[in-house]
Length: 500
Image (cartoon, rainbow, N blue to C red; front, side, top):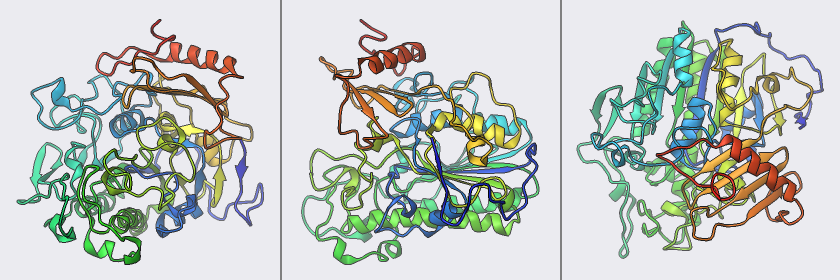
């Protein structure tokens, strides 16, 4: 794969800022994770309707990847892959289920990571880093083996449960083991209004949870600036329901919205759904700006590796109202996938390929664009390399640090990229170089056929090459046979691979 240099930056040109000691373990790390942000929903990835100046500036100061993938096409498993460095064939968490379905003692939260699961935060905490997370967790209830405090975070503040995070005006957030009540009259995340005028004010509550979480992140940076820290910021934007503040919505043209969203495709009604969705992405961009400003104020911006990405693609169409996707999103209006096939919940490119930007002055050249394939399992070894720490030996990813720092001049040699996803009908995908093998509907009475795509020539996955490339199907089957461990909580039989 090649690296594309921004205009004005010659190959081999000296960087304008001093190079940090390559062996330094004192780098800070801030990892920003958007929620359901599509590949084409920020400016540097081609978005034309929603200004994202802070994210665009991050890209101008760092490196932007064009072939970066989530670990899964939905929330909880994507976060599990990110935190543990295990792809979906090995990950403990491979889907979104509530803990209570298997562990009735918990009334809130998703099925937990086990006590044995090793996370990025645990690696950093052992090395003496202060560790913080503000946002949405989704990997185990408070008090479970997947409690964020038990998984390496000194401070967690935000939503433990993804279902609670459907509301931006929830009854409570969590500060470690303390349930913090923030709204005596919370706003539900789901409602329908089949008739009558839809009013924005009906779905705006008292305390807006994102404002508390970004403020907590700013405090963490200020308080921990004297020592190394790892800060994980899984913000909830732009995941629906859509009820951003009125002032955010008012920044966008009233002419965009000629009809309201009435909640038919789940989540909340909104009188101006296009403006509301744009407002959520604009607010997310503002949080990125606030994080960067906090790093500058603390004097640590130039020794902090900042990574920005998303947990999966934009949300998928709904069954009840063809005009809108789930929650009222209009992905066609915003060209959210930039022509990639599929959406959230799909192992096609539109569900998995996500924006990814990394910034570190002096080590990562400014303004570079790179098409090296990478995905969430790579972050554990990458961040270990960046900070001089030792990662576990049994990770599934490869370090992208040589690519980020320009110390590698040959393509990265990597194992196949693997997704074994038991939800949305059961799906698998394997990326082999530029080729991708997909199979859908594995849980159906008659599973779908194997499909083969050449992503270099056909990024939209429009031309199935399965009939002419049985060799790639056999290769993908062998990869899946080798890389799919049994999982009793999230089983997925793969016909011809793990079953006859």
